[in-house]
Image 1 (tube, rainbow, N blue to C red):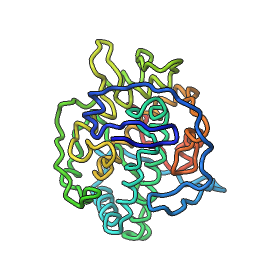
Image 2: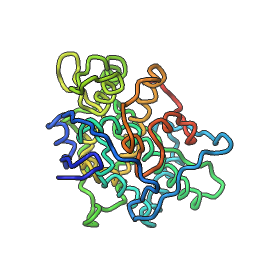
Image 3: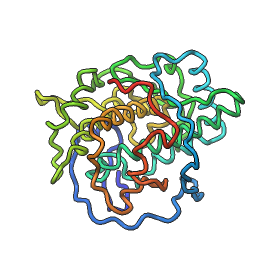
Image 4: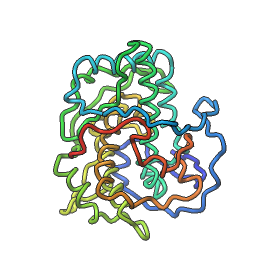
Length: 313
């Protein structure tokens, strides 16, 4: 599959199985153009710039899905079902289908550098839409956040039969999930390696810094000390299987959001100890299009109204 981005034309694998098999291939990062003045949504409507709040926003905790009460689980499913009915959910999926955003390491060096901040901003957009849908269904109720799924835990049983959106483009029912190896998803020991032994990773990027090494391992390109594959984000997608294994349409499966909340949480755990390493992005590449925020504006979750109930691996 060929996709065009301001940094050039590149190939992008169709499945996460393909991503894992191909591995990471660093690419030169040429100068990028100036960011667009008005980012576009998938429907072509100009997206208003994010306005910094005049007062500190209310900060809600994203919680471990395994400890969520049934009321939260029902509200989450109902809000997504409402978003599917209105077409809002499909519009959100379309953001991820646009590979010109260059937001995966399988696209090369710039994609690796953009992966964490782009998906953080994407998750924020989903969470905002989720709260709007929930407020219409439950006026006055505490708005939901996106729960996280710790990879060492079993697949969330309360989502086992929940695939409400159709496959984009075909309007067919998504294929069933696999929820099994191969590949294996990350264990607690693997997450410890990602967080604490990132320095052993060899990305192949000239002048690689700690941010590159950490992201390389978290995204799923890393190696354990014995040389075997270190499972991370990519392996989680492939382990779930079904439409979650598709690199562009994976958000069709609601587990996508819980999976990426865990990616975001692991990044936040790492940043508590390593706050300064950053990706050397320049120009438009530093803006997380189609949204106006730069990498630097996305480093404080509380600014966007969320935190994590636990920063323990």
